[in-house]
Image (tube, helix red, strand yellow):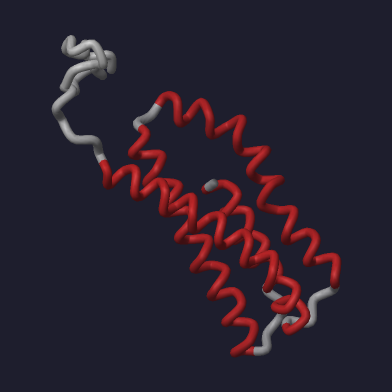
Length: 140
């Protein structure tokens, strides 16, 4: 490849330690991170739309909706100061796997919390739903 003046271009991209410039990028990692961020955003935006309806079906008071919506950012702000140094000390793959597992666990916990309340008619599962939302904040 040459520049406008016909001279060959110098390799301007610095080589990362242990990787050559000819090695392909890790597209699976990029795809995984992009998917996780998309799903987290989608779950948050969809949750804002249907959480009030779910809470009215569960016959929970209105203030529970506000607490539920505030749980994720509150945990996210509190956890950032603890999770940041852990991510710096450990491999990115380990932290990504932990976040993915926590996000999947959060989704399953939320789904089973709503389903258990609807099927059994038992006590309100607000604690399960709140824990699920907090786990989602920890994962993101």
